[in-house]
Length: 571
Image (cartoon, rainbow, N blue to C red):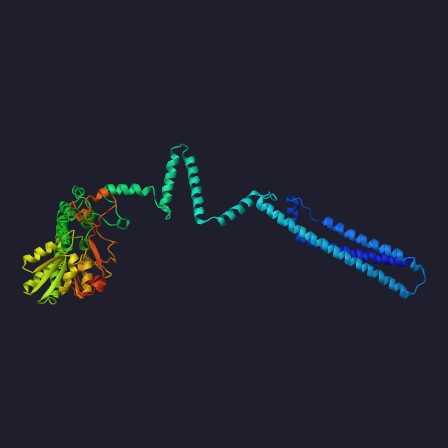
């Protein structure tokens, strides 16, 4: 009897151990699942959550119930065990007991599973409640350090903010910073608005998205009052200036001062005429120059000539022919010998100026005329634009050869230089026809050749000439009339240009006003309109058939070759 009870107790202890182990496993699983939410749920809401203590109590209750049932069955079986029974019967009773115990264990497992599921459902419900409370009421969470919370809020704001809002925030921060710095540097109340306005104006000038509202009206008003309110596209171009401010300069030679006034008044026009007048005035400067004490003649003369050239550039931008002549003169100054008296050096420079005028302008014109005389035949109708001394010389030479031809002179406002060309040709008995540029389409069908002068020939083959030349070349190209540009090599420039806006010269806009009935009359008082009077335009090489120079008849693309070989051939 005691042996049976001992066996039962030993079996009970094993069953209890197994049940406890399973209960612990279930408790660990529920604990791992609900670790993150149990603390928050316990702090924020008053809901009851199954903790480890409650789970252990449930498992102990289940084990106690199973043990009590087993004890009752053992007590009921114990008197039967006194009767004599077979060992097989004992085995069956023991087997029946083990079955009951197994059933009790299964029931304990099912109850534990149900308890775990209910706990998980409760935990999920509490999680949802906590989330709703956070969104709706913004209940205080578990206390965190303020730096972390502020950082998270800023990150959320950064994600949500747009570029405009960020710029506004940055500008507000800058303004606050500027105010703080102004308060520190100058505590008085007057310095604060000046600093802020300076900061705002600087910010307006820097930021491309915001137009300068405060600064632009004042600037435009000032410019309009001075007659200089122009389109921004042409602000870099040089305007015509008054004549009086260039006369009384004690450091400028009288011949250069006179020439500057003539440049400004447009009494001396044309590339060749301006170059010849500059060289004659330069000869007077060299003749009257006196070398300072303890200084070299070449260097001191170079500094003096540079000052005079700057003065001429202020009166009117230098022509390409004038700038090239000045470069050749500077090159000659560097080659002067040092062991020769000053008078002989002045004679050498005077001889250089005379030979330059003779070779680069006089003989070059004769060579170009010789090339073109072969092209001009009886019955030709030559069309030219504006006034060119080289074209005039070519026509006079053809008249001396007694070639029967006539000339169509196309002219344009406001200069109307074609009238001077017409007067010169008519004086030599050449039959001429005079039209304005708006009628060039009607007379182009009569022309057999188009002869054009040039202010400069650029390194990329483009022709820089009087405004309207490109239009005449375009109409000639449309009528399949050959366009010949006559240009000396001393007008070749190393500059590249494809339009007339990058570099040009502005004449007086009042020249475009024809009279009191003109729409542009009193344009300065109106403020907004600004007449644009450009001196030159750019003709592309596609519209030019050939360029006639003293070297040969060349295409426009041969300009770089001439510029490269020009020092070698003595030009």
